[in-house]
Length: 212
Ligand SMILES: [Zn+2]
Ligand SMILES: [Zn+2]
Image 1 (cartoon, rainbow, N blue to C red):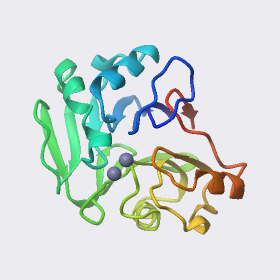
Image 2: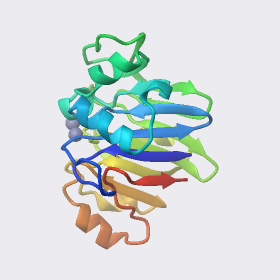
Image 3: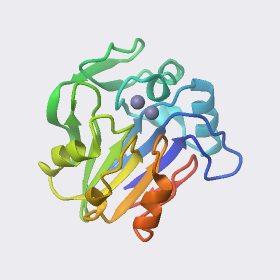
């Protein structure tokens, strides 16, 4: 599987635009799922163009939670491609989608080997992809807490990686059994996490591609 960070607070690859927010393309098992949409549709579409990601080939959008920095880019992409959207049940539906799946408590299988943790603490869902190495967990801001997210994912297997925003996260021991950590977006203690787990950490930033 492959994860391409399209939208992030920082850039990893020159030529892309940094902006507060998060979005990545998840390619796994023949599916192309856009995880979150950043805070600004023109930056999202501009970065996609520079990364040679065709917005019309995206099959679904998975919204971790509807905070502006994860959701406000959605209308521009739905205008180009009105796909199916998964959103936690506590949030209002976006308009312009072909179909909206409101995800309640989970886990929820969305495709073979691809799951939502279900909505946790009435705010956020994470995307979980089963791989031969273990589970790849993709998070928006981790508002429910990394502990609860990893616990929820563990119902599906053994977590291998966590990628995304780790807002306020400081229970660093929880990362010790993971093999890959990409702490990005709103993660406050990025440097601390990198210093504790230098071999596991992968930098985030728009343009980063993580192949698993
Ligand atoms: Zn948030
Ligand atoms: Zn955020």
